[in-house]
Length: 291
Image (cartoon, rainbow, N blue to C red; front, side):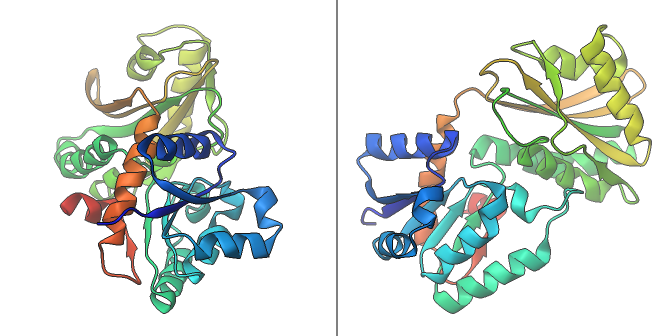
């Protein structure tokens, strides 16, 4: 298909800048950049959106809903990587909010793809968890989710970690998710993988390991703990593990992203896919991976 015209929404953030960079490298047409300053000028925003086919959004969660709604109202497709605004404090999907966006999309002939993670590999990991969890539950394994990111990541736990827990949850009826919003465990480790894998079993000593074990203990037996870890540096980009624990037996299902540019590249690829789908709908990555 012909090249799309892109708007970058939330361009002053880490991911927005990266999307802008990748679009430039690919020679894509950028109709405009929209962030806090631009939103204060409605005429400017309207002008940009009139010249836009798809907006790639990494906005602040506090304005995620209104921003997405505005884009869809203008008949522009939206590929949204912001997660927190449509999830409640318990990690559950705000279905009423999604339904509102679906209605706006249908009325205006626009489409939305939203995802906690644009990486195809991470989404295949979600699929793996959904398929494996019933087996692990039947065998008596307890699930827990760990994610580690660089210290600059604002939200904790990550949207990807919450999505992973939701994939597991149906296999464990009666359980809930346990997450402490925006209270990650801080570590000086550049690669906290060992901490994530060993701490639940008490194999690692030190204050950081004790914090992880205390977190899991607070979750109790009827909640799935989602542990967020933040390092003091710029690494890792994104490390996620789902652990299934039974005594000293641990099965770990993991995914590691080493270059955040993949989120920008695949977000652009998803935008082209979305443009070829029937208009007036909301799409998920599950549907995307079936194509």
